[in-house]
Amino acid sequence: MPNNSKFPRDFLWGASTAAHQVEGNNDNQWTQWEFGHAEKWAKEAPDKLKNLENYSSILSSISDPANYISGQGIEHYKLYKQDFDLLGQLNMNAYRFGVEWSRIEPSEGQWDIQAINHYKNYINELISREIEPILTIWHWTMPNWFTEKGGFENKANIKYFERFSAKITEELAENIKYIIILNEPNVYASHGYYLAIWPPGGKSVFRSFKVFYNLSLAHKAAYRTIKSLNPNLRIGIAAQLSDSHPIDNQLATKAVVRARNYIWNWWFLNRIIKQLDFIGLNYYFTEYYNWRQQPKNPDTPLNDMGWYMEPRGIYNLLIELNKRYHKPIIITENGLADGKDKYRKWWIKETLIAMQKAIEDGVKLVGYLHWSLLDNFEWNSGWWPKFGLVAVNRKYMKRTIKPSAKWFASEIKKYKNN
Image 1: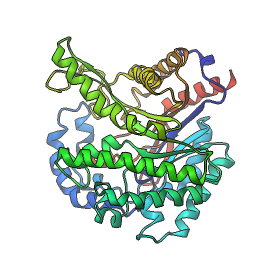
Image 2: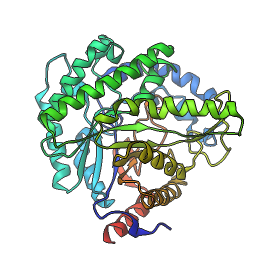
Image 3: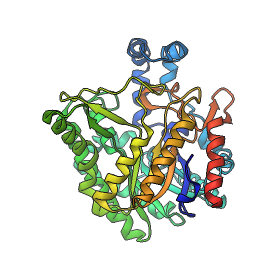
Image 4: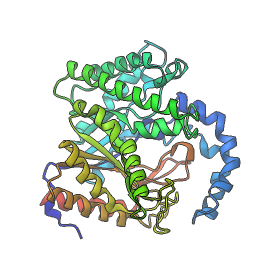
């Protein structure tokens, strides 16, 4: 068991969500993509996912086009107060959330005051519960008008994102300490512009790197603007990093994995490090590769999506981040798809041990935010993966705290009392 005395008294314990995955009834480039691809995904999924251990239990879901439509979501936009009460029941004191750009600026230059007031009330409800709000400006979704202009592939469009960041700062940041500008730019650029499984569905290395590069410029521009408006805000990024290793000791394998790590983990952070007050770490993967960049992971344990699980791998990334950048770190996402709640307690326990060891070894780790608070819409996989600490019955929108979350809440209480 972890030693409960190792975490600072002011440590941030919480969970994360993204607006599009929980709010419901959005109209952005992602909803348009869903409607255009749901039939195709439902047709292809049974063959693609046939090797998953839980295949028989998910077959009806993955074969149904409705699985791939976010629709009414889990109605978090309406039920957020109820969901914030769950944070309190879980003994959490921090919550990372996203604002939906397409709600706030549905047409170019036209601000929706009702949506802005919604997020103001949203933040005030967190503060009234003594829960630290951690606001994410961009978590992959964009207004349709911005997409029609070319999105982040067009460098000239950065000015629109900078303007949006300024609006968020002016309207919503008065009573918050932490802002995250971008979520996982590497994932967005690769999945949308090279792997072609996310909008806009490109299949180009050049376009992928162009978007990746422009997102670094967007971060820098937003950082400067936000700091000019509110110098006291602590500004960060939510970076998805992989703990990747060579499968053997061949020089070619080591060189390939080293290059892969640099591009995936460090290239973007190196470009923006002077415009970061803290680093947010999103961790899901420890991976092993051969010299052809083919994954050669152990066969077990796997989560519901077939991802190999090695939770203590987060220690390696915490140490490397500290060594490279010497910045405070918040774990902004960390979790697993686990519909039967079979592995989540184990995953969190192993992660806590790794976190404590990192703190002992000099890492300035200031928070842990589990992904996710609620079972939610998992992008192109749809509704079947269950990442939440809280289960959601979408027919009745009933929330149920899972056994692993109850255990985690009891651990948090011990940490706070020491």
